Length: 219
Image (tube, rainbow, N blue to C red):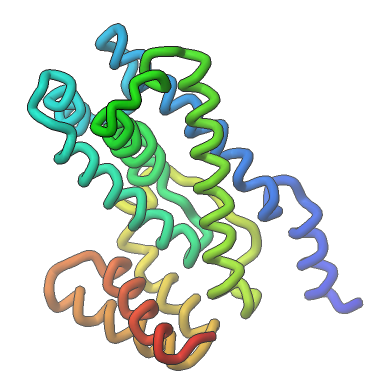
């Protein structure tokens, strides 16, 4: 066994770097965040989010509709799941705080499902299950994209990955996409360049570009 293969084996066996442990971390975080939203829904204190974002949920609670909170939170969650699958880092702020803490509760309340927000223990279990699903979806995306090229090892969660630190993830996404396949890498590069000229986040353009070309040139 070469040094590289030995290092790969150590990564895969390590709890902190293994893919199988990633959903556990996401589930625990999601459980706590969802329970925090339950605290806010019942006691008006405890939500793990910025005041402006919580205000979207509060507007729905007050009768103005949950559309804004649901759309804002769900879009962040979707974007961060795609980003997490490609770079191996799931942004806690966009995916769990905003998506699980605001977006999914808004969707449930909008559909008339209030039990997960009214009962503390149900909120813990709901958040746990949501986190497990998110974790495995991120791992699944990774396995069927950049994971095939062994360009990343394990997965992680990080606060601010899609915000202040997100500007560093654009080049990383492009490199990961290029490692997966040349057409997908070119699509990611073109998408990132277009978004850069458009004064938009490079990471978003790189993801969309890789997906667009990947639809015609699957890995």
